[in-house]
Length: 322
Ligand SMILES: *[C@@H]1O[C@H](CO)[C@@H](O)[C@H](O)[C@H]1NC(C)=O
Ligand SMILES: *[C@@H]1O[C@H](CO)[C@@H](O)[C@H](O)[C@H]1NC(C)=O
Image 1 (cartoon, helix red, strand yellow):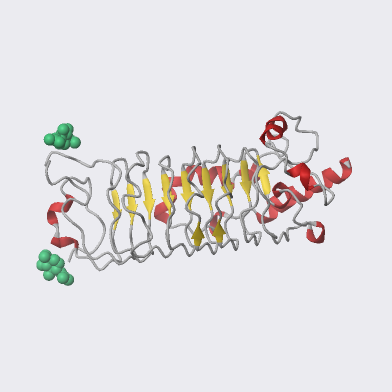
Image 2 (cartoon, helix red, strand yellow; image 1 turned 90 degrees about the vertical axis):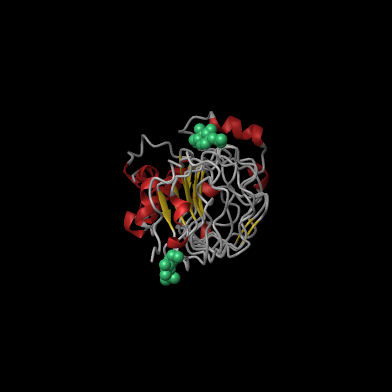
């Protein structure tokens, strides 16, 4: 059993090295880089962490029919956290199984739906990397997952329970999937969620989002006229980046939270804005000092028509001023 566990650990590390994306492969706009540069640095450096220092979570091959082991409740999950790293024990996973996932990882024909996510994906400490694994649904995640990356897969839907009781989840990155549907409650009960990246999908309707968010990127989706709820971002007091480019939006989502630093709305269908979109027409001393980066280029809007709309801003929006 020990040899087998070592073999699998080797394969998981090999898989991590082979599938670790290079900085060139990320298709973030250069302007959205600064926001998460630190995160990205941390992320892309993970392969340089000496293996004996990185806390690698790993699972064990489990005979099929042993599903009950995986279904053990949260109490067992807590015990598992205190375990000696050296011991190979079955991976405890909270929550439900994906429906017929096509697990076609490096482990080849031996992988099947009974396999814990950390064998298929790469788990390092509380981060789960599932990029580019041909997943068609969100895999069950370890209960202590804080950062979840599942980019370049084929996920179509986010279900109500995909992220259920993941109380430590801070970042979800599902860039470049085929997501068109998100359950209204999918993100609702994530008390620590800070960063939500859903760019390059087919999303038509945003569900309710937690007010703890600081960074939202839903660029290149299909939100259109009705995809964003009224006052969707109003109570997000810590939101500083809101990226909604390429969505065929026809309006600027209002009100904008006070601490917002960057608002990217390029390549939409925004036709007009009002004098009080950013500023306060009733209070000329009001200054929206945080909002330094507004992008409205690629919209059929003539910013010269509303000269009073920018008086409270530290910088003019970028867009057509002719
Ligand atoms: C006007 O805005 C300034 C700066 O934000 C604030 O200190 C002041 O209380 C506001 N006045 C009114 C009448 O709301
Ligand atoms: C934009 O608005 C300004 C001010 O109303 C106007 O002078 C200008 O002709 C407009 N430009 C276009 C291309 O409509």
